[in-house]
Length: 186
Image (cartoon, rainbow, N blue to C red):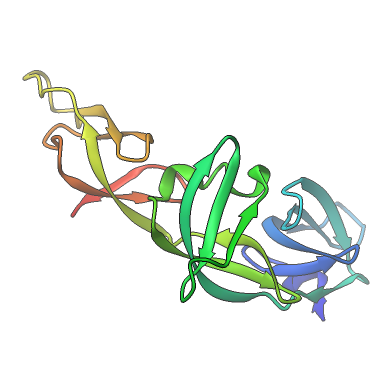
């Protein structure tokens, strides 16, 4: 069991008999009142985000989330298909709410982590950074570069990011999956 102050970002808890990921956590005290942990929680089953304040006497059970490698196969007509790493014929689909924000960082046939709760895969987890190839990059134009000039490029998954001027078509870049920003050239 986790006390109210131990419910922090990136932890998984069971709340209302459902697994949730803690997106934000802020412990504070208002004047003479007791401390409160104000959190934002995302349901791992439905993808809904809720706000909840845990008081000093509240406790939450830590969810037993296991991680298992799965393969992202393809997306078709709003369905997103995955397969087990050892046996691709064991396919499953996840609801669009759970994967829509992660799709721009996933290439077809890439191995990612699946989140398992009660022996059922309920979601996916991306690494902090992914490597993607630049599909389209406008030509570099000489000009004022004293401010750290950047340009907009399109990556192989359709994601659009701002990169330095020296990035060209065919380069492989590393992108931060939390912020969606360019990190470095590989």
